[in-house]
Amino acid sequence: MPETPPPFDPDTYAAVAAPLLGLAIDPAWVLPITLNLRALASAAELVAGFPLPDEVEAAPRFEA
Amino acid sequence: MSAPTPSDAATIAAAITQGRSTARATVAATLERIAGIDGRVGAFTDVLPERALARAEALDAALARGEPAGPLAGVPFAVKNLIDVTGLPTRAGSKINRDRPPAARDGAVVRRLEAAGAILVGALNMGEYAYDFTGENVHDGDAHNPHALDHMTGGSSGGSGAAVAAGLVPLTLGSDTNGSIRVPAAFCGCFGMKPTYGRISRAGSFPFVGSLDHLGPMARSVADLALAYDAMQGPDPDDPVATTRAPEPAYPGLETGIGGLRIAVAGGYFARNGHPEAFAAVARVAEALGASRTVELPEAQRARAAAYLITAAEGATLHLDRLRTRPQDFDPAVRDRLIAGAMIPAPFVERAQRFRRWYRDAVLDLFGGVDVILAPATPCRAPKGGLTHFVLDGVTLPIRANIGVFTQPISFIGLPVVAVPVRIDAGLPLGVQVIAAPWREDLALRVARQLERDGICTAPVAEIA
Image (cartoon, rainbow over all chains, first blue to last red; front, side):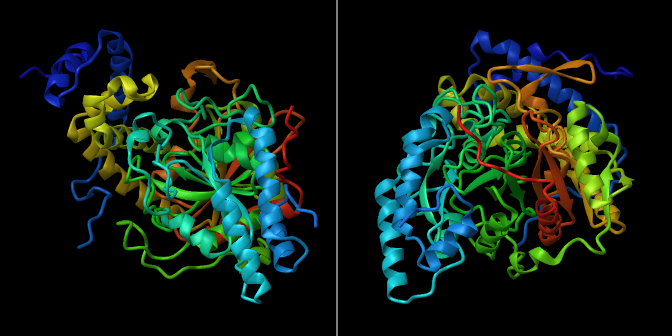
């Protein structure tokens, strides 16, 4: 396993993920979708950079 | 008998209750004003004259029989078109939802306002599926800012802000997932309230992000916000996150003042990445309240990022079937964000929800030492319609994604907020968030009322060019 993961490639990712989700993507939509994916990846990286204790549970609650 | 439109809701209700006007005259004048002005504003997508006049006549008849009037007797109101209105398909700003069957029942908030005497006159324009901060809509046409028709209303409750600012109705309802009440309140120069998450039932409204969705009122006075808020409170088993707390009316204590309240200004993240006038508005409010202390909401930038991830993922999940079958019928700007949101790996979202728990606890600790926090509502005044980018602190950024930079970290943990309008010069208005601890809407409303009483925050009807 490499020490650092390869850089995120949103074009390849979107092309692979779309069929899994049952989505047909028009070629004209690819650029805005991948720009959004880059923004989401940056947000995820920012959130992941905060050290959370393992005991912190997710916020949504289900009450039976 | 003259109708007092446009006036505020409390004045209208008093006039009707005391026999100085009638509900029918008020509603008729309201319909006439909408017909005369809304073609330029674009606030309404549906106007309901038959329903409104019938209800007004019924109310007048009840008053003539000596039956008690509600606190909103005869007050015309309108709702963002994601709230169910009997007989209308709940379009939620979309083309696709127009194929839904007409709603068989009004949304819970409509029923509660009408139980207090208010009269629904129509449904209001909004950004598609509420995934919007601009007030622009490719299907219905854009809502226009009544204070400058070539500028944005803000969104996604753009029609709700525009209708109030234009004096078409004194009271509207909007929804707020990441700022969609507070942003149009700021841009349109009116008061807006996002209650605590779970305080007001969302039953009978089309969702966007269940984890973050709120409903709330917009008006030109704080008293009107409080009257509407009080009328809509209460448990509702039809909304899975509605509180079981008993209603806690805010109107009776509205004139209590701010004595003893610890009020601070949000620093750090909330003091950068905006135009100078956004911070000048906060300074004006802080000075009026004697608030010299600064507090820092910890990790607010991460909170915004986490809200962004949860919004994209939950919104995409809601719309996935429609993205599969009718992608061409979405607003392209909404569709592309939703498709990207559908592709977010699950661990990113789970991490964001876990961070949300941490952030909630950290901010609640902060409220141990402060009662109310002030922050900008938006980083700028209303941009011109059609603009796609603006400059914040020297960086060019997309408008749609960044108008909510100061609202998202607050709604992320469901804090109650009253957005108050501030005019620091002759230009377009700005907004300031008056933020309180969960379930303390009363404090935010009291502070807003003090600012209104002192003339710091006013919401005059716009003069439509």
